Each structure stands twice: as structure tokens, then as C-alpha cells.
Image: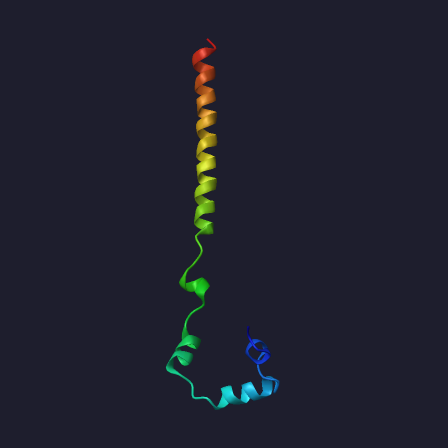
Length: 78
């Protein structure tokens, strides 16, 4: 079972923690973390590509359906 201090932190408040963080030396990883690009730019979503393929496939199926119906109408209604 965790004690209250382990679960919620010390009762001194955040001021003490902020002072300790300000006095602590910064690591090289801290400065590199600020220079990294946002995740959205580094790993772009492919949702727009999938949407474009989906609509193009629907359009192609519609064109095939219309062409097939014209062919059926010309061939079998004589």
C-alpha cells in the first residue's frame, strides 16, 4: 500500500518542486527535445491518401456500372 506522500507528493506544494527543478542541471536530452519537430510532421497521417483512393475506386466502379448497363442495353434489347 502506498503512503500519502508517495501517492500525492509532499505537502510543501508545487513551489518546492519548481525550485528544485530550476536548480537541477539540464541534460542534453532536454535541449534536444525542444529542437525535435512535432510528431504530426515527422509521422504524417495517411488518412487523406486512403480517402482519395476510396473516392477514386468508387468513381471507377460507378463508371464501370454505367458502361456495363449501356453495353447490356445495347446488346440485349435488339
